[in-house]
Amino acid sequence: MKSELQPSVLKKMMAASYLLLKEKQDYLDSINVFPVPDGDTGINMLLTMKTIVDEMEKVPQNGRLEDYCSAISKGAFKGAKGNSGTILSQFLIGFVNELKAQTKIDQFTFANALTKGSKKAYSAVEHPKEGTMLTIFRAMSETATKIIQTNPSSDWKVFVQEIFNNAQKTTLETIDMMKELKEGGVVDSGALGVVYMFQGWAMVIEEESGFTDGLVVSKDLEGLHSQVDTSKVEADLVFRYCTEALVKGAKISENEARKIFSEFGDFLLIMQEADMIKIHVHTDRPVQTIQEAERFGAVDAIKIDDMLSQSQTNM
Image (cartoon, rainbow, N blue to C red):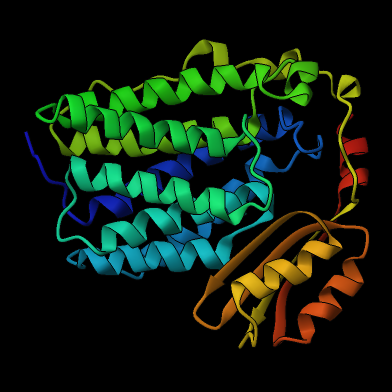
């Protein structure tokens, strides 16, 4: 039994998560009702993971821990798509930034990385809401921390299975945390996406540690699309357009950008990496939002989605 994981395990973890999200993308889209039933949670998480996997392919098999972590961070920033993909990317960036500062991957550093990832994801959201993927990130980090405090000699199998099981339990509870989910009769799509992501991680970690029994997602979390009725969901769509832009050579800080673009709408997410800032906001003024972004640098990767049209299409 291995107490430490090799850095290359990160490449396998990301690949396994990508494949599971690819398999479950349509299902995740079909149960997506928050913040509106626009059916894009699965695809946004998948596209974000795809960019990470592509970046990981550039790292040699004998790469250092820092190399793998940097590739994940770069891919997460570049590939972040939509609300779910952007929050996922922030979690992953926080996770690997903590690992990158360490010399090994053991359960202690892994638990700390989960905690840092959860905190970064929460801090990226202007108004964090429980019952979303944020809740699952926190549940995972709290479970991992509890294990290393109460059972520090546990093996990787016990470690990842307890995290996985509690992530599923918490995801089942999301249906009672938000009215949109209760009305739709589903769990949060992003939360379940995180369960699939961690399932991929856990399967790889188990295999690397000498265990091969696998992990299965609860039947209570699957097959929900057959009962969802989006017409019963009263979507809280205050602003119509999901607007995203990447500002290169940004002459503005993350905090300044957060203050400026909070005036344009809600569900604001700001990401910063070196001299680049990525903006995600739900707004009724998408063109003006892009024009405002152009004041601070060269704007690229513009994406504007009409959430009202998407939600009506999915009814």
